[in-house]
Length: 372
Ligand code: UD1
Image 1 (cartoon, helix red, strand yellow):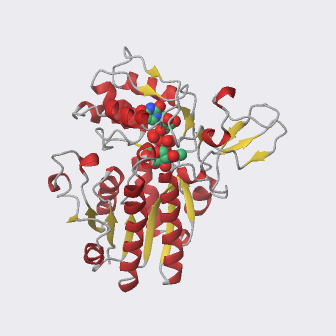
Image 2: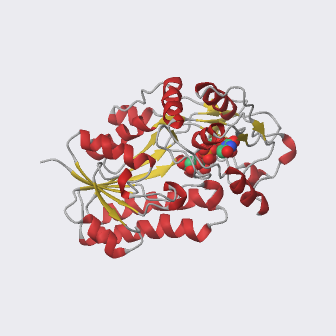
Image 3: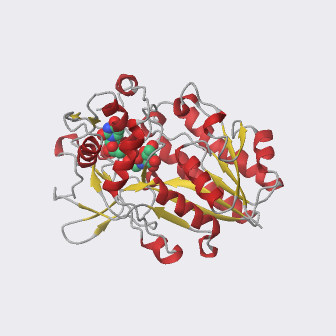
């Protein structure tokens, strides 16, 4: 019997890609999405989703919508969320409401209509700063974020008590969470709520802690989305990408096709139940490097990025995934080559129009003192 899967937030970047991947595997997919204008643009509509699966348009916080969406479903992928770290630092009520109340409503609806398994999209943001090693080889789990360190004078990179530089190393799932933004706080609550409620009601749950997901289909006009979509939108409009800090901060970029494959495994693999996994490429790159590579892929290496020399509130310096657990337990390894992935992104971007809302977003953050 083919699986019947509900994807909350199924109209989004990851949701649409996953919908296609699941349908290809013979699943029946229902999408629940509010098609928010910030993400989907003013002309957001069903036409972009229609062929992908059955669509329920509504708000995850509406209990009757959530109950309706669950009818006849075997498994749930919970992606519905507000996703901007910077924006979460002022639109606090909106983020807590959608991400946490939304998850609460979904979990309550599941009490009356339990499913076999629920997979929730958690985030690398819950780690705060990634794991570091000091000059003596000791692992440092609790490096405060820059804002927490309050050491604006000592450079961008974290240092130990004697001022010696710390080396960032891959971050495993066992690292203690350290919540540096409202977004991170809501994602952690989402992850825990799903795991504990599922256990209490005899459902299987899996949390995937996604690193920096990129690829075709990311909302180009949403100035609070991932950095590659933001840079692509800037370059498409002939403008310089704006790089926070000095551009040497490092991240783990994972292609959306790999992420969809990880979700598929999380839905199906018997060993996944009750577990939390990092989903990353296992490689890390600096933001300056990815800005340059993207500009080259888009044929716009004439555009030089602007280095802000300022940090965005809630940002961490370095974090990249230790991907051993998901490899060992689910047999998952990200296979997309980054340069190839960027070329695909560039091709897709060339066919799009993107409204450049970055200046407005920057103004919003700066007015509130959230870039310093
Ligand atoms: C954050 C979250 C992550 C979430 C992602 C997308 C953390 C630690 N992680 O990742 O869970 O999925 O946002 O919402 O909070 N940057 C620029 N210029 C820009 C935009 C971003 O230089 O115009 C820089 C940021 O300062 C950061 C890096 O690019 O250093 C990556 O930013 P972003 O894509 O927003 O993702 P993260 O902050 O890594």
